[in-house]
Image: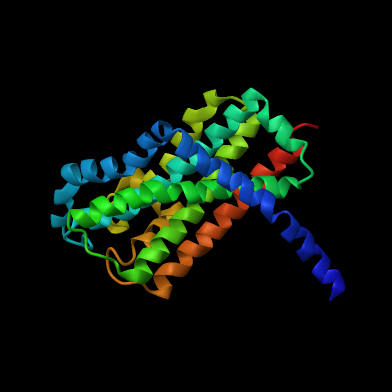
Length: 264
């Protein structure tokens, strides 16, 4: 029991460092709110624009709801998380360019704890665009998904934001410049775009259908969509959770590998 308690105590000793890195990212939003406004507003504009353009898709036979805004809100929730995750990588690239990250590497903290603090900050920051989107959606008449559906959607989106932060962090460590920002943003955006974002899988055709059918993010989108379209069930939840854990584990491993190789 003492041997088992030792690793746990060591892990707990590094939690303050993780918390400080998360707080630093939140303070950046408070200090420079203008930098966060575009990413915070983008999911709401995304929802409004797509509803105005594709709202009549609900008239197609087989569409799962007659309210397109309810169908697209979960996608906007995930987009808010992806924007926050990509911004984490951009901010890290800035810290690398300015030399602050080199000082951080000198701290007596394991690389895994440093990475946890960096990527979990994306989960916190994602709450801002998600909240703004939900306020606008409910004000425009989107039906409340229930407490369970809402908590599930936000929790999955926040975890997905951390996974995307791992992806953008790996790119920041690889290229070490903010010039890689378009790659971070485009990759995260496309991961959500090529799913059942605009229509159910059965109504998609061609390449859109083929990619969405094998894209694991499709399961995450469908898990978040529960409550907004239909009810929340375990059968509709566990595939999304499994996909989220798998994607997160792979991306965290890639980012941690890059972090451990940095400064050698």
